[in-house]
Length: 220
Image (cartoon, rainbow, N blue to C red; front, side):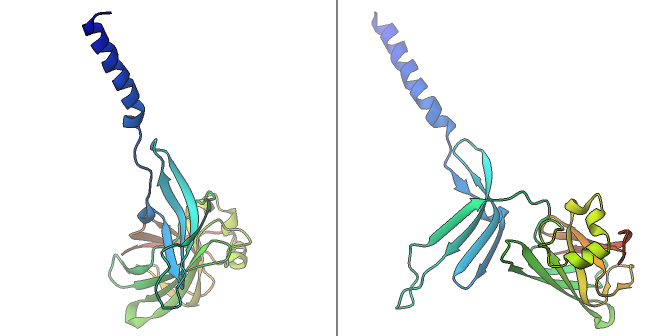
């Protein structure tokens, strides 16, 4: 075997050893793409995507529990518990302040995490002439675990063909007004579609069959 052939074989061997390494990327987690909430010494995350070394995306729910030392400092070692995220077709609402596109109604959203893993959103709105209203929503399917399930069933929401494409809730206090829809009192069901910064509120009849009434758009 001449020197030229030896050099070619050495080059091919080197390249073949590099190809697997070159195809791998550093695994990472994308916390900003999921739903993350903090309370006391726990940080909880839902639908948190991770990317493995081959670029495959997976979704996890997590609870990170922090420990405080006797001197008040944080222990650098946290307890982390994770599980594969269930398939959820409706998203939690992003906390913050939203204004209707006509500039009349302003809503503030605050979230809590329920023991069943759902995110419940409490929405306080101020409308025309400082008219106040309160609404409640929850992520996940319209099943018995939904906090507003009885009222949503009375309205026939669970029978809608698009029930799994929206996040559902009801008016819990006052009368909710949006755009030119007028005002809707307690127990009226509302479905929300969101991309995080824009909310589309759709109001439906209070009794079955669930009939669309009106809608309005809010921006964060």
